Length: 162
Image (cartoon, rainbow, N blue to C red):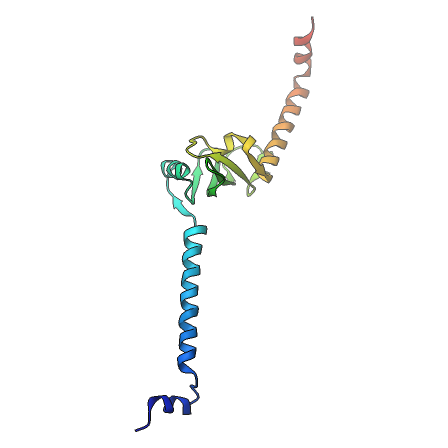
C-alpha cells in the first residue's frame, strides 16, 4: 500500500504540511486582531444613565442613547484623555421639539473632554467641547440673542436712560 504522503503528492497536494501551518498561523493572527479590536475599540451599550455614570468614573468604552422630551442624544466614551478626564463623543440624533432652526443640528456631533466621575451631561459644559454641533449651537444662540435685542431695543434703551 502506498504511503498517504505519496498519494496526496500524486494528486497535487505538495507542501500540504507547509500550507496547513501557514493557514493556522493566519487564523491565529486573525483571532488576535479580532480580540484587540473588540477589547480596545468596541464600545458596549449602556441602557441607563447610572451605567453611563459608572463608565465615566472608570472612563470605560461605552455608548448610551439618552432620550428626553426635547431631543435624542448619542454619547460614546472613546477613552482616557490624561489621568483625570475622558473623551466623549456626542451626537444629536433627533430633535423631538423645538424651532425649525434647531433641526439643522440633527446628525451633527462634537467631542468633549470631561472630568472622570462628572455626573452632568457633557453638553452642559460647552467650554470643553469642539466640533460642528458646538459651532451650530453657538450660531443659534447668537442669532436668538440678536433677534431678542432687536425686538426689545426700545425697552433696553429706556432702561439705560438717566
